[in-house]
Length: 260
Image (cartoon, rainbow, N blue to C red; front, side):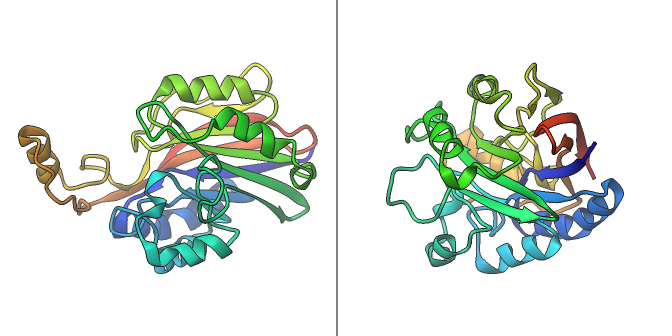
């Protein structure tokens, strides 16, 4: 049986998250003998958006593809890179004409990986349908060669994440939720062979409010005043999943949470 292991890590938050990624990801790759890596980087640049420097650090740490979400647009100077760099994605279901691409295929060590970035609509901006967007990508001629299909679903509610997961079960190899920055404990293999988790968690400071300074977040919540958010400082960890995949069938065999 031909098997591969994929690591998918949750949202990198600021410099502490980048430093944790640079420290922990090479160890994870060695420990799990991982073959392919995705990292959500939408909060990597000072907690909001991506910069060229942050992207380069994530790629150098071992990421094959950097996914994102609603904050990917924060740094206007990054848009030309988003337009031209196939290893960084924005959600595919933004309306036509949005800068960048929402999916890519990458050949690595004889295996073709299709990575799709989608964004939810419940309690978020009501953009195009993620269900229909997946169908269009999955059925595209350019995607047909892919053996392994990885989906980063950047969404707010578990309801929407689980609904999409069951809709994709048997077609996507892995459906991993991002955006909430809190790692969930519902990792499992769905009935038709797809691996699923509601949220990968985050790569950032553990003693924080979703990676941000606790004092500022408390004051924002108490007073309903939009104080400027800053990344928390302190010990950071890298959270996500490791999935073992049968590349002959494209099905997931095992999914394990990681938090290092």
